[in-house]
Length: 85
Image 1: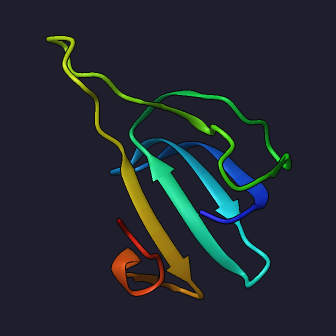
Image 2: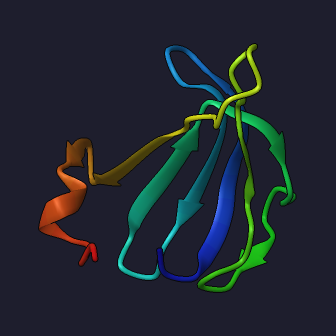
Image 3: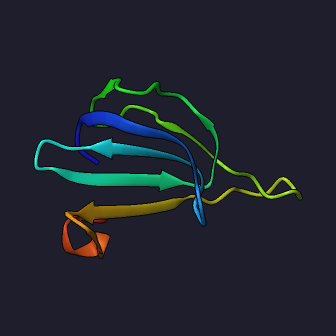
């Protein structure tokens, strides 16, 4: 995602450990289900910076995380606003 300001770090119901980043266009990127977080509250994040690590499964396989974009009061489909390879 783009650069922005870390506006929340902590637990969110249904998302687990979560980092929320506010972008200049007033949208928010939510990263949830994290096992660790590499940022601090109100830290300015540049595009490409690490924000945390995905939770790993108990069997040691690759972990998963939750990603969402919120504009105003609504979550939007990331495919509509991000170009994926």
